[in-house]
Image (tube, rainbow, N blue to C red):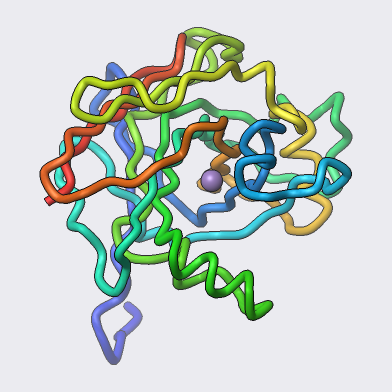
Length: 228
Ligand code: MN
């Protein structure tokens, strides 16, 4: 048996809807500016294609945990509601037409963002890790297997304290799910356990301590948490 010199990292897991089984998380990729209206609200250029960044696996906050601590350093924490793809099979340089074969399931995620740190990084041409990849920055719902309700195409919404803040359609994505997987697989070999946050529609905005956040995607589920 391997003797670790420090405690080995714990495998992050996400519950699977309707079972006691869990999905083990290998890594978390995220797509930036994948909805035109959000790209515009972020000051993006309409010729600029979407792109990827990542969060550490242990940034995931999965059920039954419903508390997200307000992160350190920031004065401007933002919500971004996103469809999450759970990858169940390996693939590299996957054609768009075959990309759906890699999908194990879907979840509802929130890409929490320290917007002030992200904007400062953008201004200086620095990486986004401190703005995007912080502790507890990736709340997520249980994963719904694709075998259960197929590939979602409907509405994506988030409310804060009962008020709707983002209300979009998955069909408004610039890169659809198959294209996201195909693109990602050109850059990295995808493996079972990878999660991909596929970008957010317009209407991102601030969260403060005490906020009750509820996100939903038609035919996928609901994510719910409180900022503490
Ligand atoms: Mn995002």
